[in-house]
Amino acid sequence: MNTDRRYFRLRFLSLFFIPTIIGGIGLAITSSDSFVEFREYVRGKTIPEILVKSGRTGKELRLLEYESLSKFHLEQFEKDLPPSSMPSTRLLFATAERTLLPTLSIAIDAGDLLDRNSGIIANYSKRGRSWERPAFVSYFENGDLQFALGAGVRVHGGKSRAASLKSYRLYFRELYGSPSVPNGHLFRGRGDPIRSLVVHNDVRTKESDQMDVRWHFMNPLAYDLARQIDCITPSTQPIQFYLNGIYQGPYVLTEHISEHFLTAHFGHPNFVFVRMKPNKQGGPFPVERGNPRLFDDLRHWTQNAPAPLTVDDVNRRVDLLNLTNWIISILYAGVTDPFQGAALLDELDPNARWFWVNWDMDHAFMDLYNQVPNPWEIDNFTGLSGVLQSKKPRSVIFERLRRESAEYRQFFLTRITEVLNHILTPEYVAQRIAYYESVALSYGVPDTKFLEAMRLFSSERPAALRRQMDKYFDAGNSYRLTVSSRSPIKFKIDGYDVDDKYVGWYFEDTEAQIEVEESSLQSTYTWNVNGRPISERGRSLVLSLTNNINIEIQ
Image (cartoon, rainbow, N blue to C red; front, side, top):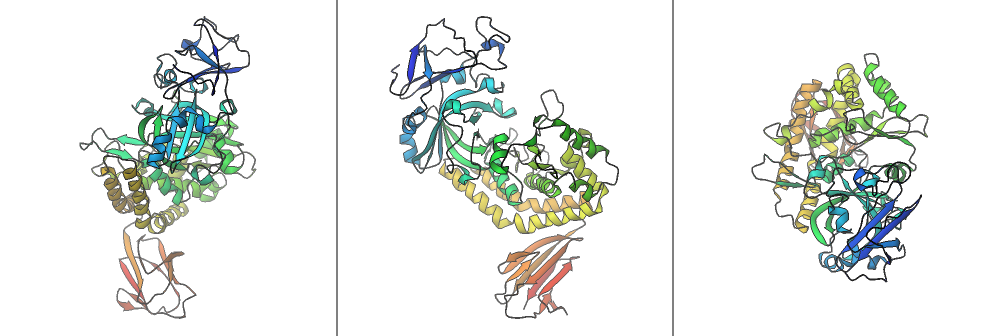
């Protein structure tokens, strides 16, 4: 192998040399035009036994040691290596210039991926810092190199770790040259400073689907819709992904929900941080940061607060609008694995309330487990409200309020009506699906059947949700309201601007508010309701629907 010594200072090590590093870190690397090898030594707290050399265990020495095929080790990482000279950049310059699409390139030692004892792909189920390997990462847009950095790479995911194409997690640390991605280069700066990223293989295939449709971009589309209704979500960016110069397909870069996410979005990391995923032993959710007693207190209170539970009771402890928006995002997208994300409580705010961040919505739109004849008919209420025995705080709060609080039932009816009529409008959802269609076509996705399935789902899902609302909230029938004007009169429906014509659906117990803007020259108007004028002649009209209504403003 031809090693370019301009880029790395190397030292030859015998095959039997085992360094003893006390409190230190070393790296090992060799490089050529088409291949790169790294090795790392770390003194840490834990290490898989299979990696411990010479029987050295216990507190005396815990060693990660990977012998490179060339027997070369990097004595010191060249932090001043120019981004254009990094292996991840050199491997992809010509390709990135041709495609012009957002492109991520990772260059990593093949042994660190595939070695049966130490490779992260060969040992994809292993987790933690012990299974992080050094690499170079380069990111291109419009054919131009945006940044290139050293980074630590791990395999990412739950069950998806077993997929043939892995997802990865990137950590930017001083050890590798920089603690974060340069500001402003990803997600329009919304996540700066970015210290960790997920490189998602965001593809699902339903085994029972006779068409063998490969579904792309469910996660980012579901995040888009959730963000539109004021849920807190990670930012995403579709990319072309290359690993050691080999194209892996269209992937999605995603902000990693961690203490770095907290600092970037809320200004500090001092939160009780609960990752809403049970531990491997099936026990309670792990509290990753902060005082675990505070989450235990929430869980105990949700189950033992005296009935009836009230909106005021919950709002003192929980951001109920945030929780309700999360529930509606899960309901609309038909997510069949809903209890993901993070529960957060700001420890610096004495009046802080618990809130949640959306995460892992890649079961959306498709009914992965084929529970119903048509995906848009999936009933998420059973999973969200019917599992009191699971002791999940979100579920217990929602189910108790649904049963015990008439005020919350009305609030939920009003909020889901607002979302379906004014926020997740057919026009908005169609625009987001069209965007991902353009991404899929640009990235050469061979089969776009999933896009038509998403369109059909989005057109049918609102009516299915309204039917389910009658089942779980006794909402009754829902009725169509159509509003138009003969002249170019600007008006609002429920406080939302309407250009010229409006169509929405309302439950029997929810009101529609129609108001002509004061900028209009007239002060009184004729309101024709189902073809008949009514006595109301002012600028506004409030009505509860008991049948389909067509209003024309003159």
